[in-house]
Length: 268
Image 1 (tube, rainbow, N blue to C red):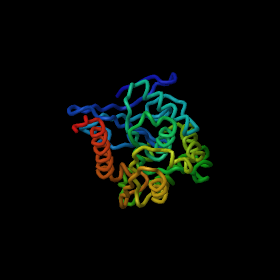
Image 2: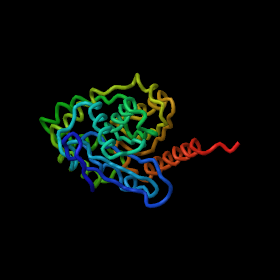
Image 3: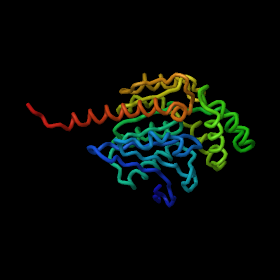
Image 4: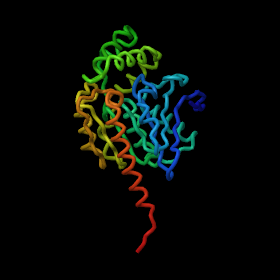
């Protein structure tokens, strides 16, 4: 997988190019707090008919640190990364903290986007004090607690173990910075300013960002559709990947058709 240097940091990302078909708007995937690009399922990272890019944010996965302690700083970094790659206007998908980054990006750089896919996230992401206090004092204990909090009943034991492995592998300072950034994040009063098509995906068993968070965004964003996946928790895209991939693929196709119709010549 490729690397690129942005802000003097070596950044790791995955890149999948559509083999055939007309030019498609790219899809960019941004993971959540303490995550990596592998929190997105292979079926989404390798959509047959779309160009897809998934980033390891600074300090995460194989990307060099440091991380950030502010959602806006991550959004600005993402803009510079997209510019460095020369991406045309794209659809931005974010999970959890990545959804906060996506909303902030849409407020700051709307001209760079064609749409938003907001997965298991909210317009405010307050963090339980036990998480912030415990990350530095008992990281493994917090990780074990989160394994229960972030998964629905259908998550397999292997998925739970993998989540804990990823959690423990993330640098403690980066992890703390992510959760602090989430706790500070709040754009609830700014959603009406985002005039982009948005797909909101929520899990019915999500304890971290409950369905009411998704419903609030669906009611507040000017152009949003809400999909609730029954039985899914916060790690919805790994617990029920087929449904998430199907929802996002349908969203991309709708945006593509709308763009093609707008660009079609007038035959009158």
